[in-house]
Image (cartoon, rainbow, N blue to C red):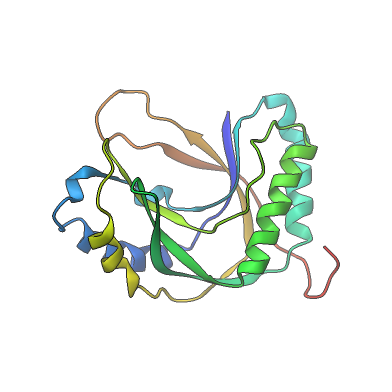
Length: 194
């Protein structure tokens, strides 16, 4: 199954972002973007790709350990950015050091459980809201619309394991479906060794 570790923002915070994204849908050129599905909005911590069933028990143990070592921390969705001319995303503010540490711990947990992970890259917190359909799109009008966005703060309290079910129908615009298949409360205390 295709898996990733993630932080799932609460629905109230996603609704705030949704109001901004709704306005972006009305901008010229919006039809050149494939907008991500709101039920699937998340902050990916570690993308694992295809994971064999035999690795799941050890992966769950190691992700639980990573969550147990990490204290809850504050975040908020904030502003926006892009990757080249192909992806538009909402940014994140708050305790980014703790978020990066949780991402590193989730990545390490997967590796130690035997998951073949891609090359390790520095973690950049983001929530993807749209991707270019084909040719690259001028994202500047959309970035301007995201720039002033300031979501309310929330306390991250869980590390989630999410299954990604890729589209299979071939229908244009069909979105991946995401299903949470595990979750562990963050339980570390401030100042605890990582």
